[in-house]
Amino acid sequence: MTTSKRFRIRNVSPADVDALFTLSHHLDSINLPHDRAHIADMVQASERAFANASNTPEGQQYMLIMEDIDTDKAIGTGLIIAQHGTLDDPHTYFDVLPEEHYSVSTKHYTSHTTLRLGVNFNGPTEMGGLVLHPDYRGHALRLGKCLSLSRFLLVAMRPERFRDRVLAEVMPPLKDDGGSHLWDAIGAKVTGMSYQAADILSRQNTEFIRSLFPRGNIYASFLPTTAQEVIGAVGPHAAGAARILKKMGLRKMPRVDPFDGGPHFEGETRQLLSTTMRCMGLPQISSADLSDHGIIAQTSPKGAPRFFRCAIGGFEPSPNDDTILISEQTHQILRTDTTLPISALSVV
Image 1 (cartoon, one colour):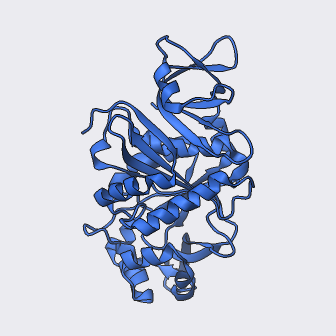
Image 2 (cartoon, one colour):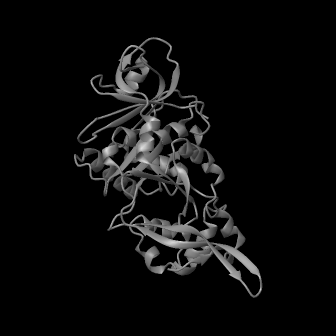
Image 3 (tube, one colour):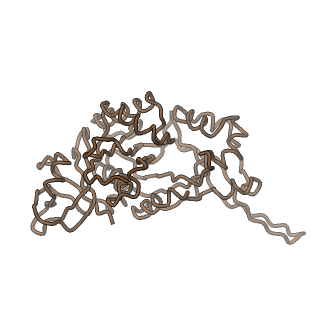
């Protein structure tokens, strides 16, 4: 595990493509595939979003990178999809619904869990997937949590650019080979595709899901036990992420991902504002020991965001005015513009 102590989270730029491709080699995850062209497309989409003066969320995707300043290495990424579900690219999911039956003649009652494919053409903002280099997991500064919370800070600082509801999909338990028990039971049978192949295709479009999946209720009890058990379950590596979502005001919904059964957590953007924007003001550099530890962020308060930078360090609201005290090191990491407000959020 690394002993580095200085980290920055910021919006990606075209200069980061090589570093992100190197990072993807250690992971090759669904959230950061080992595909240079795909990574370059993600970076370009984020560049357009940060440069866009319009507040329209449709088609906007913001990508953040975490870097180890001491080693000048990319160690993680986070994604925000400003609107997940549009006319051109609707959001698909399974509603998880109870269905009851009772026979008067046999006096027999049954209750089934069913899955029904749903489509949303006017979807919420989605907190997209996080990736963190394995060497930095379990770090004393809780880097994974900081990276996750930085996305919420960006939404809270510029809420007009996002939807009024926020969605996060949590990874369920997967097979040892990275596949999905639920996909094997349903998706593979109706599409003829593997979990990995379907995931790659879904990055371009989800039309095949809407066209090929059953339109009626699917009885979960008819599926293999291994598939039933993952419906709405939080995977062992996602438990921490689920706790963060709950703390931010999102709650688990009766809705899951149709690929792997991962649960959906949703909440109102205004709830994020009350949770994350309790500490906001102009930065003031201080040499004092600062009592709170967390993430401190800055972005343009209006127009095109242009930039987003976030540091991990100490901060303290000033008792005398509407300023936030930060250390000289935090100031250097943020490259703080002292005329623009910063927002800080404790990491405990």
